Length: 122
Image 1 (spheres, rainbow, N blue to C red):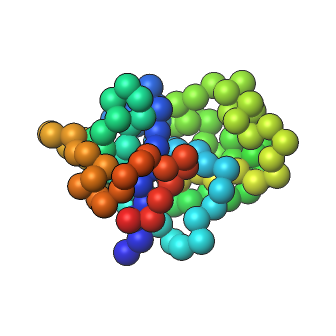
Image 2 (image 1 turned 120 degrees about the vertical axis):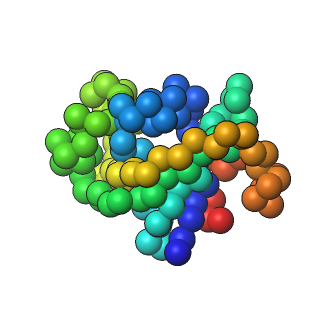
């Protein structure tokens, strides 16, 4: 089982927890098959707030990824296009079984000192 910790903007974390965003987008594909994502909410929250299972990972050109994910992307097409500008590959993690922690955790609980720019293997 492979877990990663993702740094995610609080607005997107809220949408993931509400179920309106079931895809999390990244520019880089993980080398290992990811089974679970630990969700770190960036500033001003700066806590690990939950986790989700990875149901599927879509890796394709940005337009194809958008066509598959847009209904549950939780973001606008303009935001998506800006994020993937000048990129040939887009990665989308399809999240399921999202669990919000009753008590948010510190990064140090995972042996991590600083929040990763994108992700870190756990």
